[in-house]
Length: 80
Image 1 (cartoon, one colour):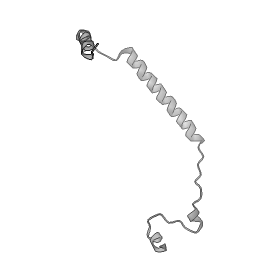
Image 2 (cartoon, rainbow, N blue to C red):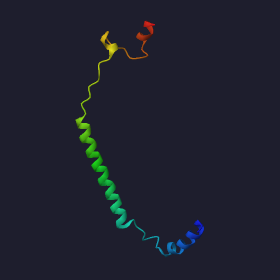
Image 3 (cartoon, rainbow, N blue to C red):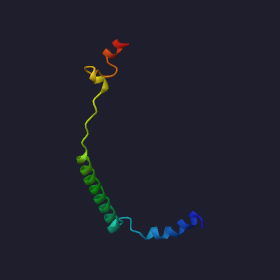
Image 4 (cartoon, rainbow, N blue to C red):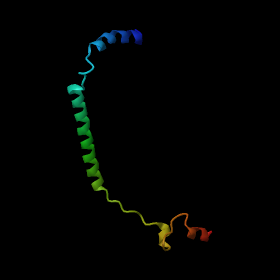
């Protein structure tokens, strides 16, 4: 069966619908509510995991010589 034949069978069904009364319905609400609960649970889990993070940056090896200068500064050009 071709796609155009399948569409011709669905056209009469579409004409029976009142375009002013079409709503998402209960199924649309359930899907939206499930997505909202899923996002809420993911955010709660993310906050819990981010709370466990204890990140301390390793000391910069160039910083041991003295004050570290940012890359591209005028001081780095003098060393060359």
